[in-house]
Length: 163
Ligand SMILES: [Zn+2]
Image: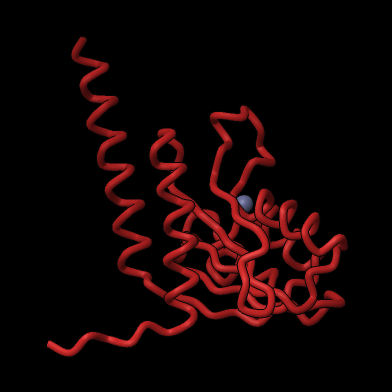
């Protein structure tokens, strides 16, 4: 079999998946994010909501915080965000606020996603900024990681009940 050439989007999605695995290791829902500027990662983040007991500790917001510090600017105009799961309303809002140029999503989140599932906050013409959106990059890998996490969670909860 010929080795498949990895695209740039896949390369950075792999980095986002690496971040998601850090969340997984903390028993957090495995969501990871990286922000790329001129072919360099300038911000990384993973979901730490339960660990930090903080609604704001989503992967995307943590990555935005780091990228802004690195850029010394709240504007992330020429940056691309890679995130393993479709962003929620809070993170999609922050993406528009930070004027991120492009967002690449692994798998969709039909129950909470605001980059096309429930709403598409990233591409609303009414706002002063729209982010280009690419979905389905390494989708299989991202969604199977989520499924595995929730499967294990259900098993853990079952065991707890039995005790
Ligand atoms: Zn979020």
